[in-house]
Image 1 (cartoon, rainbow, N blue to C red):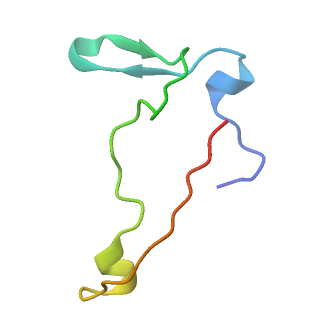
Image 2 (cartoon, rainbow, N blue to C red):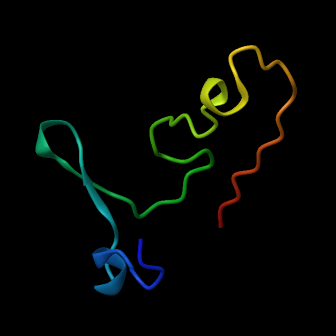
Length: 64
């Protein structure tokens, strides 16, 4: 991905919009304590560390 790329909603100075159930638009204009994005497996533990990995992990997901 080009490092200069910016999403269109940011370039146009508007809020990002997703389409939810039934085509209803979801506008992100509030702040949420734990976020409002569905869960995502960012660790992929089995693929990255192996099937038998049992150690501790320390993860940080900082937000503004």
